Length: 161
Image (cartoon, rainbow, N blue to C red; front, side, top):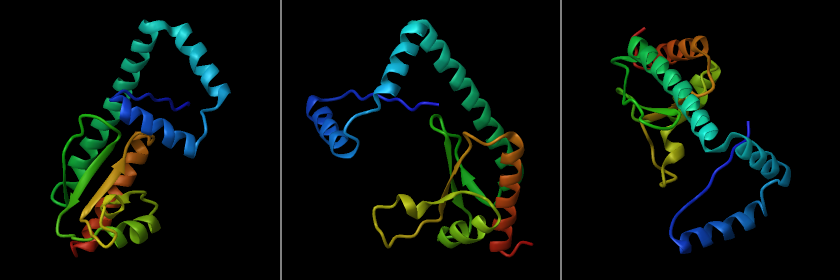
């Protein structure tokens, strides 16, 4: 796939974004720009809208599958809310104040890829009992196996096994 984006906002903000882009990427690939232009011209507004609707349905289905698996395997081990947008679920781990070593060592050893909450803190010395999980690329089988492994890790960490 191709990642594309746009920004709207106050001219001062857009000007700063343009400067930041010039300092980091110079410009987007000309080939990518031409490809996206041709695709959007071919689709038109109706085609673009239909594409966005298909993608929303795809990710809504993956989200709902992931949440059902969380309900089945993680209830009592963590708390979470159903996201209304995005491709991530945030967990607050029950009884675990610092998720860092659990996620960066133990989960990695079990091939469970999650991001510890501390990665998103502004305080470099901060700790977090939160974890972010992505569901956008995994198949239902991969989600189920990952959630089961995560549940087993949490139970072991809490001395429940």
